[in-house]
Length: 429
Ligand SMILES: Cc1ncc(COP(=O)(O)O)c(C=O)c1O
Image (cartoon, rainbow, N blue to C red):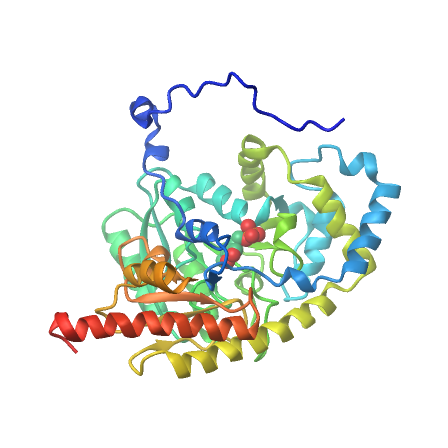
């Protein structure tokens, strides 16, 4: 009989007062911040709210008959194994499949250089824990992935942001940051970068900058953490080489990715590819964290990839995302003020819009949600130094074109209200 009520009738809530625990928290936990993204995710649940905040792939279009076929095979042939623990580094077939997926982007590796992780997020977190001591400096694009910020904070890293433009990270700006940190005797432990369809900006690093970045890493012994969940989520333009490929086995790139955007985020399978000594250290961190990633999910992916060409479904998704991105471009042209600008991504799930600098997008987000039932990610969540206050990340993958138009219109109304207030009371433009 199924268990229905897990709450014993006499349960007492003890010690609920938060002050009881304050003095006990580790410095790491005391300084932990919530990802602005995760906070907003909760809001997406509210009825009537349009959310352009999350990074949701379109899971509704996943081919049901393929899902059923794979699950049937798994239940018939692998039941005991898929319900069992697996090796910390991941199933061998899973790591072989990951090598195949990476090879699609010209990034070649071998299974012993791969660690399967619980989503790409765990790969980021493990990397930070493995390399960063409290107070160490790291470098990241400005803006950076808002979901990486809690990993930076929990590793107690100090973060310097490297400026970007439409061609990605500006290499001269990186050199300046490196010089400053070296002069201070505190060289950065690593550079975290998302070169392709960056989250949150949607920007892609040009080929020339990729080459310069890897050359610089070799020259200065800079460890690059290349996070590449979106490389194959491309709708326009030609693929560019990964930093992993350009490093050509020199060992200065740790490559992170995930099945979340090319198959499904609910499976929670990602990976790190790195020189074997680093893989071994990451493995030790993972042993402490969760022993192993879901064998059920790994088996599902292995069997799915054995039977089907994942690129077919991905091509279908990319077609959907292209139309949604275009709908967002149109809506922004119509609904946002003339002073606003936004990036023009050729892939990925997001674009980055910048508003007049007197508009605080944190305030705007509160207004947009309360009065107009629409959510987006305020830009400050993508910086560790308080910048980004007049910017926002907008997601175009998770909802239909009609909903995108309506959502952008609602944000546009909220912006106009704030601009009107500024005209009335701000004495500015
Ligand atoms: C740049 C980047 N890295 C990592 C992740 C996390 O991926 P996963 O859902 O596989 O944990 C995301 C998710 O949005 C992302 O955008």
